[in-house]
Length: 358
Image 1 (cartoon, helix red, strand yellow):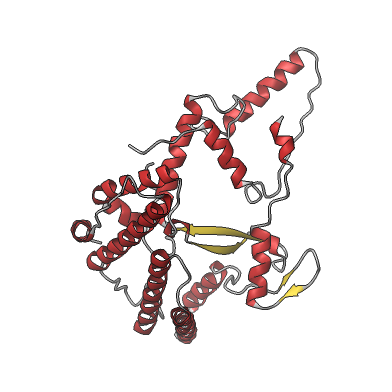
Image 2: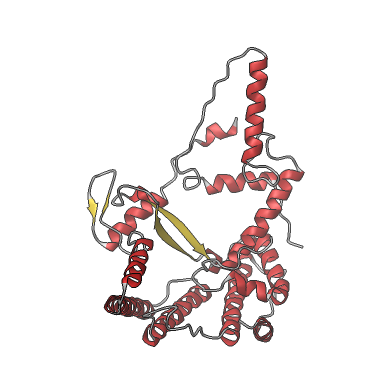
């Protein structure tokens, strides 16, 4: 990647934000979505102009043929078109476009599988001595369990088994994103940039690209993020994520949904807004003493070691006074999955005012 060429191309295609102060809420939010869509398109155009296609050695990625690269490129192009349509029209992409993406995905997957199979067979055929044999053995050991295939999943509630892809997805979705339990409201009344090498979101923009052109992006992003905070609005593109189900290591049975954990691949522009808001909230929480002294999680300068020292101090103080110490440890199942977002937002609005990003 040529950072200078990337910055020049982005400067040429960078959209000019126009934030109307007298616009109504609906128009202002639509303006935010349109600016984000144009910004993502500009970054994608700059990346295409400044980042050359990788030409690896035949030994670095054996079996990845030009056919695979062409099919993968076509799949990414259709996916970007669908993402741009969603951001601009705020609705699902047309059926023909989604069908083209499904066909391109299947064709790419089949081509990659076919090339890998042929490459493996050729490697086995080319074994000439014991060193090659043990090299092949180490390769098979390091691959681990095959994770591209999800076995039939058993519903822990009914005992039924899900065989089809849709049934498996529905079962994992219920496991990862359960409905929050009903609450009795009457009872409640008494950044630094992230790592450059990380998985990008659906738009394919990596943290390394944002770092390389930060001096070009900062003015536009500052206005965009301030507008998001003033409106209390998260753009449609920022909410677009890909959820991947990964196996929890060391589980004896992968036929139950609890043996998997979800990770959400968010678009990097939304991660930056999230980091800035979290940093501002952390500062305000410390500046206004909104957290109790015995709260150690998620605070700068506090950690597990501080919690252990505080616990030991309390225990030894009780022992010194001749008292008996008992400990009650609680682990809330699915605490983050079952959190009430409306209740949290109400509490944050009552305690913290973010204003704007300077």
